[in-house]
Length: 441
Image (cartoon, rainbow, N blue to C red):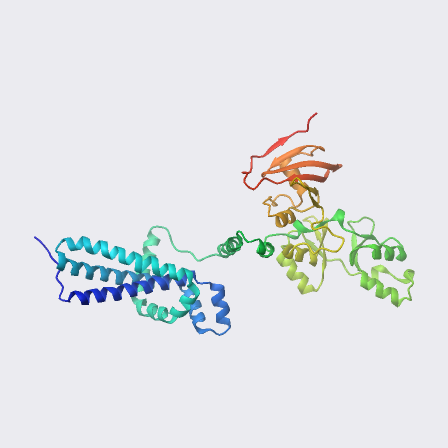
């Protein structure tokens, strides 16, 4: 039995309705793409300035699943209706062959005018488009809410049966997206290299501990409190730092922190007589913090206590080193160089592309300065990384290759690596496997 579609509308009326439906289809495509692609930070900034449309876009973004579902629902409804109308009209003109003609024609029209063209335009002008369409999108969502909720109910329970429940976005996901955005917008742009490093460091503040960047206790400049006040004054003024720990008996036994300004004020009050000063009375109590404290927490602690200097201790209470507010700031902005500093203290680039590096230089500083990717989870300094990877105390002249870098031991003091030469991999070379070569006999 043959079945034919009949339509009472004249062909020009059917064609007009199909064109209108294609325009509506394009509207839904534009609205959906613009809503997803619009810059949420820019919308937030505009909303704070009083832009009502931007505030409406923020409202829609918070309900993005419902809004996108409504757009998709409307898009499919108009396209199905337009296809049915075109099929009926062409069957009336060409008989059963009109079904094939309608399928080909509507596929081409929907793909070009309902998908590719509107979405391409929306991607190029997402912010402007969504600001213009926000009120109509809000109205569309309100009109389609009953049907949309029914669809969402069905989708939710089907996903639940399949074991694929939707979960809210976590903090880690948002952080990773932000990291990805930083890397994406920095590709090929050398002018934003410094800003990229700063943004990376800010995101790392909650993951890096003070133990990883603290100045080691061997390098902390301290003064013995067992000396005479004149000797203490002389050493304090000769120190390049404004805050100097005072210790008794041994350097690990810190009993106070002497501030150069407080020392000079006390010296003036005593008429310039250094022996009339008691440095321990001027010194402030030392502030000890655990090495597991994150930089973000310590930065807030410095701000809250209005202090700039803290001593870092390990889980046994032994002194690990010292950290200052400037150390944390330098983690964000890079080294705050003084006139006598090198571009990066402890690192000397060589003409052959290698670097002469002191063993105490931190891995984080090297990674940030030269965009390297050396791991810093097991060691804080470059010497510590070599010891960790080598699993032995290396000899002078010994060469190691791991993570694509070549490390040559240049100097060693007892069991401590004090200097080494690092040759980074060529940009086009893949990182080779870890290997160790002993020096020639």
